[in-house]
Image (cartoon, rainbow, N blue to C red; front, side, top):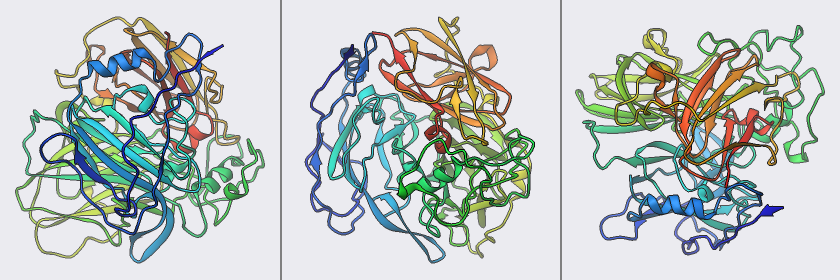
Length: 549
């Protein structure tokens, strides 16, 4: 028997003809709202979609259950900040005269930033102008479970022609972002930054630069993320069984072990997109399996980069977000050192480094003091022999070459947040775990059968916890590939000094290594745990952490 809950979603007015893909911010309280307007063509009116909670297994907290609503009430109810956006098919200009057809939030890449203050109530309305169902997940934020945006787990998908409002209290400041949680839509153009400002901001800086890293394949020579997934699912012939050898160039699959029959739209199209022989010492071996034709920073290719203008001596906060589907990036700013202040939205003791390794889904905030000149911010596609670039400009001078490799990339690299210590204000107290879960990461490229504990994703398979517990998860990577593991609705502490390290929601687990994390079960509901390599998760490396009722 299953418990089933329904309620009316808190829905905004239907999207009027205010602009295709408009993302407008306003406040329901007095004062100035946040956000900005991006005008385009007319937007079709969408139909509000009622909230319906998917069936919840008997004995577990439903996404819209009284326990969830009670926790949300305890978070308070600050000023309501309302935003609206449209998921739509649109041409996107990537720089250098390259235009591709993709899906995006409006007509821009990345989508328009959403910004509010900790304690505010976010009301983010998504109108679905796509030819298929979609959803929206605010990555990294501890929110009410029914607003988490996971179809089949926390909500029904948003139908084509419908709209839905995600409404929750944004209790914690930090650098976050949002993206779909439907199939491999993440690897199209639907992503944007979500910044929650600290009303008691302790940092002092003059300017802020939000940086989104991405690997791009959609619309290039007929490729789509669905066709890439179909090609991957055929597996790869690695001869001796090890995960990849060769030149690091694309190769057609030599096997035919597809785990399913893709739809005609998702069958392989365009040129081969499998990548062989990617090697990275920082990632413990193989770096990835997809040969992306482009790597982007803020939606631009390195031969036509985005530029950030500042003055010499300005203190700049960089909010770095890896929105990629399958690529880790090594990031450095030529001629500068970076002072890391936050990871995944939570403060750490300031730590200097020359470069950062950023996995998919991870975020780092850093401070730099700008020198005089023109400087490349380079994001090296780790192990893939390619990179992207943006530019910090504080004076005159030519743009750096697209292939520039700042010396800082090969100096001191912060390759894991395990080397960071949490700020005292967010450090976990010492406490013995009430529950220990050992979760093995399994699968391989040959059969593309990624999973947890050899069990591919099933909505019926749950990892049970109880409200108030300190939960320890031990991720044991039994594969030849690295995996960035992301937990929804919570932050965990990496194993560190005195057992309490940096607070995170996404952590990379290297091949044949293990990572131990602790978190407090303080947000009831059904929460996804998955690899943030979109092709791994969509192939089965995800599961549900569920609170007992």
